[in-house]
Length: 68
Figure 1: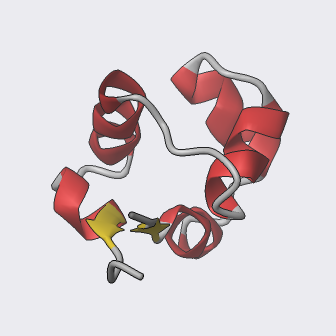
Figure 2: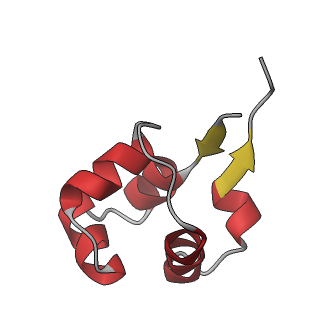
């Protein structure tokens, strides 16, 4: 099952770079890029930290996609 995320959208709305977000979350810029492009699904802890950074519920950032 695919996880769809809105991290890139909210990051751009706040006008911050991947590197800036990565620093706030304690991960690499490459990790943020992989999350945004759907190549990596974050751990629950990282998903919650990301939602907290954007001051929103985790469900607004991440949702389950349709099953194949």
